[in-house]
Length: 137
Length: 189
Image 1 (cartoon, rainbow over the protein chains, first blue to last red):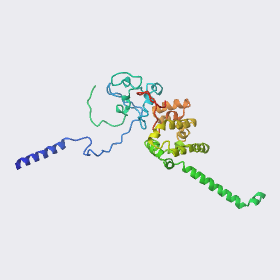
Image 2 (tube, chains in turn blue, cyan):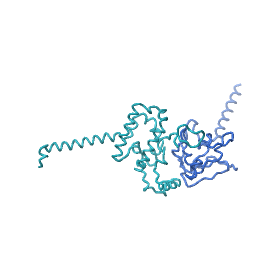
Image 3 (cartoon, rainbow over the protein chains, first blue to last red):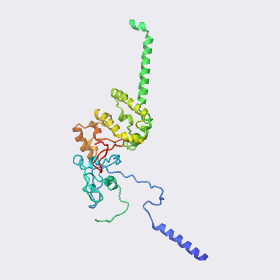
Image 4 (cartoon, each protein chain N blue to C red):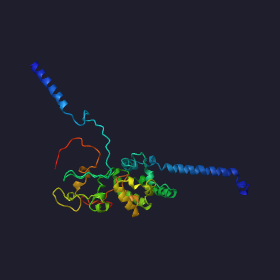
């Protein structure tokens, strides 16, 4: 009995040890409740637009967006990107899909489910991808 | 010595002159004391609402460490317009007294009206407080982003003033109707 217990204990020990060796997370050995220090990435301000990698990719924002408000009161992206404002501002108007509700019905106004632009569209940073990707559309 | 100087006495004149300096200095000192950020945020209405919002913006913290405080944008620098603004601000004291915006909810409810007052004031004086630092003539378009070059050059030609586009740069915006979802009850357009 004692022998069996010792065997089980040593086995679990080696297993857990080897598992620790195998898993090497990107965050390193920093415990979950702590935060890794970030590299200082710069938001790319303008002049270069990263093209879409595939048809369904939400386009990336090619300008800085500091201080742009998306609140209950206002969505400052829409000051330029709404269908009405786009011809004058020269911005890309929001896509047709943004006028559809979840039933696929088209509305004269932009659907409220598209309100939070940054859920899909992100600004360009000079950061390299942390993980490799072999996806092809 | 002239007759009138003899009559009032030279020391009276010196004394009056000194009193004038002290009076004017004291007035100006206490006047300028009301043109400081600590004075502005000594009211919780300002401290809890607009000041907190402003702390996230570029006029509070930025790469070069230049800061525009409350009076830099909200009080004219020239003496005449400054006095006019200060006299009008007595209305704000009255509303402090009656508690028009004493809670964040009350402030939100009045935000549209308050913002429209300030936009109208800045449009009327050609965004003078912006231009105290941001002079159009001093702008180097080659240093600006392509969006800024495009809009600045055309907007200035049209005679537009800063505040017409740059609303809500230091504070949260009031409700604005933007053709998203259902129409809003009360909103600027």
